[in-house]
Image 1 (cartoon, rainbow, N blue to C red):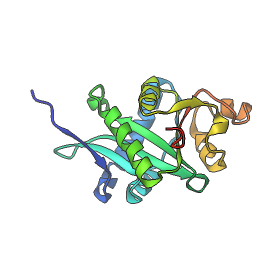
Image 2 (tube, helix red, strand yellow):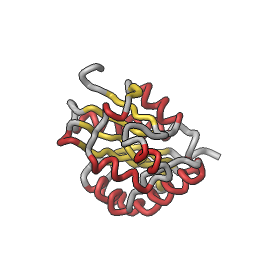
Image 3 (cartoon, one colour):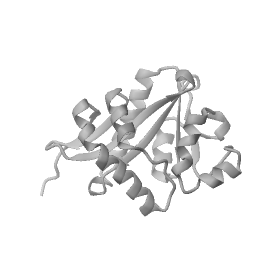
Image 4 (cartoon, rainbow, N blue to C red):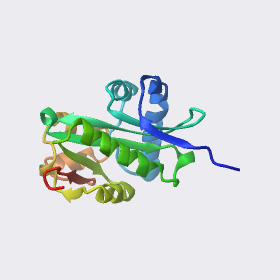
Length: 181
């Protein structure tokens, strides 16, 4: 049987119908991996879609496949690439890499001088980030904005972050600095 073509593109307003599915899969995936996650609300996903700060992957027939979004910090000095998720049915097909490349390019086009960062515990994301020119850094090299770190409160490892005075945790911080690339 031939696989249905997957389209990776900037999210459009009609994609808000996927918000509940996206947040449920984010949480289920984190639980299955036994890793921490900063939980998102459907409203926050919808906001990113409406602001033009999201990438979505869908099949030709309109089935949701994957998602990621960007957020700005420190008055646009930093951009985070966040929330990368692919439906279990469509994993191991290169979709995550396509979404990651697209969200990175969206970040670069919207905020060309911003440093782009990613906080992850996933090896696959670390490898994708490395291919794009990200380097591992200490937490002091990414945004110090409290609003970013407060989003970690829903993570099972938040106590580790707090006990380390938000200097490190179980996730790896990775940074792309356009001045160096």
